[in-house]
Image (cartoon, rainbow, N blue to C red):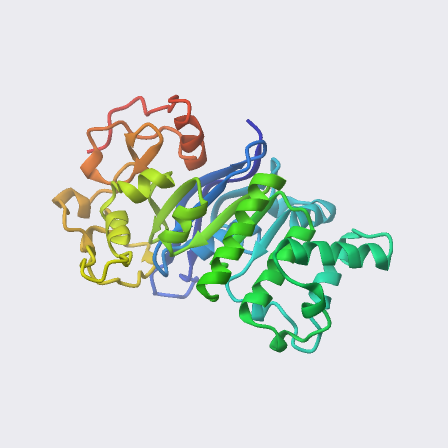
Length: 352
């Protein structure tokens, strides 16, 4: 099966220069993930602040080079692309950022952020064609061009600015949208509009979406699969319905139980939310051991395998060591194979 975007055994380290005595911070630790070229999906990457979500997104966008491993687009290493190949990559893999205000130049009207990619990629033959493309894209995300174009960024609401960035990405007809917390700064009604637009793009236009979020509720609403990160490692991954309704990793259980319930008389099931700090190169064993209620002595000494409590789900926890472990580190391959109950397991016994 052809891969649109593939990261292979990627790790990202920060710090630890030649003369530095500080330990290396491990932001991403040996993650493999691929996006299928023929089967557009919406995949969530979730976790607390500091879990590595944005770093992983930047690696997949080619904004940051991996310390180890490789990022490939249509079989080509992003770091080794020619100028023309990189231009194609930039057009076909589009980001939507958390804070749209940082993307706008306050000295230009918002038209500028829509017009520049049309000129850069030669998308229109005339000014009339360019204007038509802009208007169609704005209307697809629920904006009225007459109330949007011609204004400066500060004259628009946060929701309008964010939807302009969604429209900009859509206008380029990308194959993949990397949406990093796209609705965290807008109100509930606009959140539903933006998420609905992303889901529509996936279903009707065949655009794959990687949805970076700390909000499991919105991930559950629009995503098919979810990958839970903790300190740069995959804690759990699988179909979003299974992971949210029946989490297998203690960290995922903590996240799910911390979701506010609509009934104020029902207490939350989780403990206090703790901001995660990046792991360092001296960390041993399971990174969640210090916060885990089910911790065992070996959790502090050994890194757990990615065990398979279900045919299409993995959990990196010794609570599931009686199950087989993954032989293929690519999380997307697990999710895809699980649909056909053809998950390949390791030939050796699970690590103990």
